[in-house]
Amino acid sequence: MSVRLINDADIPQWVELRAKLWPHESLLSLDSEGRAALVADPPLIVFVEDECNTIAGFLELGLRSVAEGCTSSPTPYVEGWYVEHDRQRRGIGRALMQAAEAWSRAKGYTELGSDTEVTNTLSQEVHKALGFTEQETLVVFRKDL
Image (tube, rainbow, N blue to C red; front, side, top):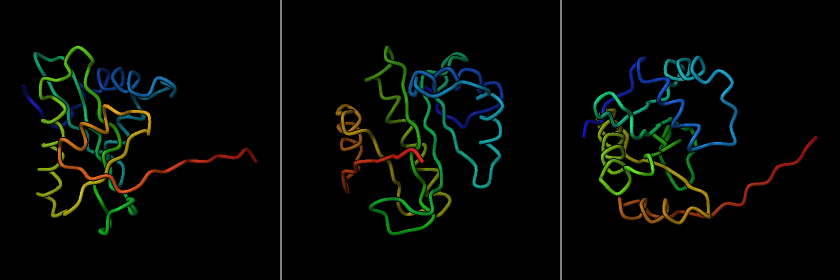
């Protein structure tokens, strides 16, 4: 198992995996948007699990000025975390999270935030198994104007 930062050659596979995690989002030009996100300020930090040039999972880490339940700012925040279904329960998700934690510590951050949908009980269990503590439950609203 090899977890590392994403490189340009990984972007097409990353885009495909993102579409599996967020199938309701448009793929429009995620390839070019993905490249832009990686160099934005602040950048999206993306870790991938690479086995024989095939990406089986990723973790996207952003920096948020406000992260629920966290006291520091900015706070590294897990924006996306995905492992291919047939590769789950092999330690890939844990290795991706450990890479994000190590990167955050090396940059001097003291907290890591994350979230999941209330219906995603597997993600909640995995977060808790990796040492996260639940801070609050949100109900998100939207209104057309």
